[in-house]
Length: 256
Image (cartoon, rainbow, N blue to C red; front, side, top):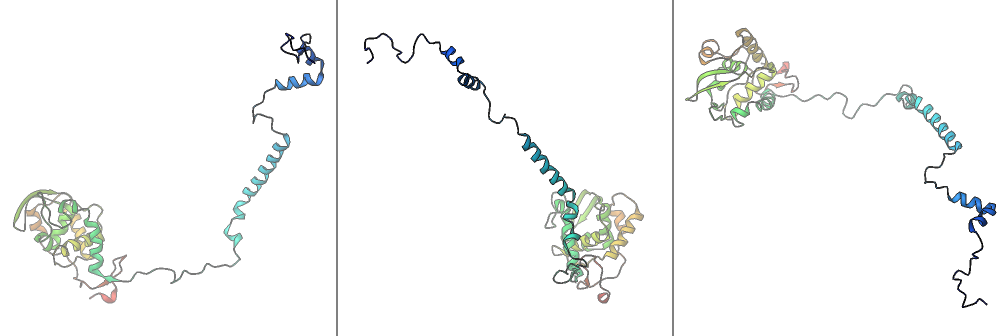
C-alpha cells in the first residue's frame, strides 16, 4: 500500500529515469517521435504516378474524339442518302396578298413622317413658328411644289392658310428614293382632313429628276411659284388600285 505521507507528488514517474534516453532506446518509439515531427498539409501530398498516366490516357482519347467530331456530327452522316427536307406547311415562298395603293402608301408614309413630326407635330398643326401641314395649300395643291419643298427645303417668308411665317426648313431629300417620296407625299396629302390625290412612284421619280436639274440649295416662294407651280407628270391612279405591298408594283390587270 502506498505511503500516504510520502512527499512524492508524482508517484507514476521515477525521477531517476531520463525520458528522452528511454525513448531513444526503443527503435519503434524513436520512429514514432520522428514521424510526429513531420507536418503535412492536406492536398500537398505527391500525386501517384498511376493517376498521371490515367489522365494522359483520357486526354488522348478525348483528343481523338474531338478530331473526328466534324464527321461524327456532320449532317450527311446522320441522314440517309437521297433524303429531302419536307416542304413547310402551306408551301415554300410566302406571297403577300395585294392591297389598295392608297393603303400601302399611307402605311409607309406614316413611318417616314415620324422624322417630320418633331417640327410639324403628329397632328400636322405645327406651332412655334412652324407652319401647319393640315389644311395647307402647299400640301394639298400642286404636287411639284410640294416635292421640291421636301427635297430642297424652303427659306424666307411664306404664307400658309392665311398666316405669314418666316422660317427655314432644311432639305429632307437625303435618303428619300422614289418609293419613299411617293409614300410621304401621299400620307401628308391625305392625313388630318386633307383630301388630295395620291402621288405615285412614277410621279415621285419625275420629282427627283426635276430636283437634280434645278441644283442644290433651298427654294424660296418666288422660285417655287415661278418654276414648280404645277402637277407632277404621270398618270393618275384610283385609290383602290391593287399593288404588291413589298415592291409597290401595280398589277397590270388593275392599271387603268
